[in-house]
Length: 266
Image (cartoon, rainbow, N blue to C red; front, side, top):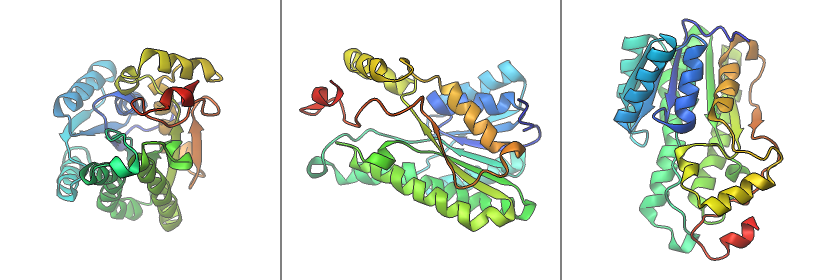
């Protein structure tokens, strides 16, 4: 299907690798001009280079610290100057570098995950929503997590940020729908990315074996779903939660470094 994104400008956060890079590539393939946001400048530049080589689409990289409002504000202003007003925001970026039970969790780690996974989404939308409503078109798409629905053992910061992100996305869907802006949520499964490559092989294989499809998810599958939600064909979809996760979650959200984690996956 042709999602007819030609002439649209899309901002993708976390675009340096993994799901974010795949989303950038799919949106570019569908004709969008892509702004690659990431704090990893080299990775963002590589994504932009790959897009230009593969599709010829216009793609530009921006080093952005999503935890800092001023960084987001400056980047969004530069995107407008470089590529035009933002039509699509795909908020993919998230960090999960803090695995500990509540009593052991460090305050700074809690604050960092909330800042990147949640506050960054607020900062991004705040900077582009007026332009979207003025033009009566906008697509806000947020990548959430099953942890945001079920909680996460040893992941209270990540699960809390994702649950709050769901609430933020739903709120946006109520506030701006009559002005042509939709807001939707995508839930991935266990995706084949550099992050999942770091899981212990035995634990990862048990997760795969328990899944209904018996495989890891291709990040392009998430990109295709996001491209659809960004399109005119999806203009009637708002406030929805799209499960692009290959079926029921086959694993518990427990880290790999706590007592009892193997039992959770057995």
